[in-house]
Every structure is written in C-alpha cells, then in structure tokens.
Length: 126
Image (cartoon, rainbow, N blue to C red; front, top):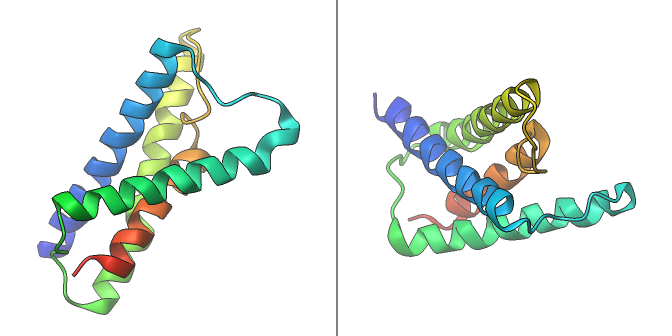
C-alpha cells in the first residue's frame, strides 16, 4: 500500500508541476523556440528545469516514504512514465479541440522532466 501511495504522490506532484509550467507557457506566450534544430537544447532545458524542481522539492519533502531499494526503483521508473502519459493525453486533447499546445504537452518532454525530478529525489531524498 505504501508503494502505491508513493507512486500516486510522486506522479501527482510531477503532473501538477508540469501543468503549471504548461499554463505559464500558455498565458505568457514564453515558449521554447519551435526550431527543429534546437531539439537537443529543448531536451537539456527540460532536464535542467526538472533537476531544479527536484532539488527544490527536497527542501519541502526531504524524506522519501519508501526505504526498500527495489521499490524506490519502481517509483523512479513508473512515476515519469505515468506523468509523460498524462502530459501526452493533455496535448492530444488540446490538439483534438483545436487549441494551441506547448512543448511540455507531449509524452517525451513530460517524461524527461518528470524523470529528472524523480532521479534527483531518488539519489538525494533521505
């Protein structure tokens, strides 16, 4: 039960953070340039932002709930996948309803940022 709760908490935190970033991008119009030559740069931005958020979350939630290493790895893998799926679904819904989308609203970018957050928490959460 603790594992399921941890996965839910980690995933909810990551989805909320990424939705807030997407809302910020929508409302301010500040988006990462859509030039396809900058895909590596975008990838590094999402990794960097995810790491910053991961370190920031350690100040708020310094302790991990799970002590078992195997279960921690399960959370490290499953939470970013679920977050990426959620962001991909949001992006698909927005495209199907003729709304603009931002880079964050894709599986890949959602996964990358969520994995960065999870990795920082996996390594440094006590």
